[in-house]
Image (cartoon, rainbow, N blue to C red; front, top):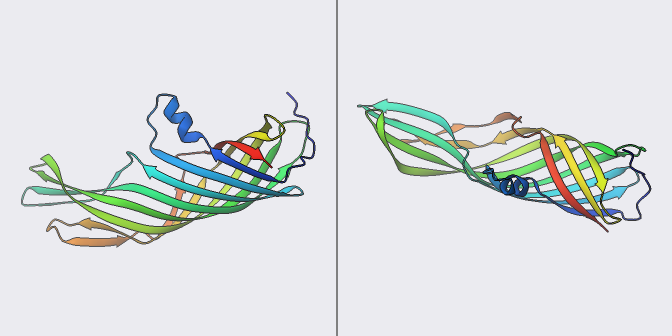
Length: 207
């Protein structure tokens, strides 16, 4: 299938990512609710890109620390809550007679919040939540990507974008030890996100 490529008279694009809506409408439970807005400005074969992301987590959590004292176990689970992120990047457009593609990278700065959910268990059973601790931290990410644009009309385009994210986190995370003393540990370091290889499935308006 061939896509006729011609120079668009429109130099700006505004779109919205549809991934979480697609997951929710398919009957699956999404891990988060996301709002991602996309703005692009074309300069010859290069797009200057800006993105805004607001995300609220539903269900992901992981055990970060556990301890036992006098048959009482303290379990600390970290649950991400909200992320506010801003991206800036560039994409190179390759014009061919086949499926149009573009490649590039985004730089992301994000503010992340999350809760440490502290469970108390008696004799390794009968667990109950007895405290929650609030965490906040900053992260910087690099997102290389490969995407394609499928024209729907003169002004509407459907885009699919693949990539993975490399993050560096700055900050600390709170937990309670066996004596129920508040402690912190540093989370500074790199993180590679391999749980999502589709960055965007978006509808974009050209103007």
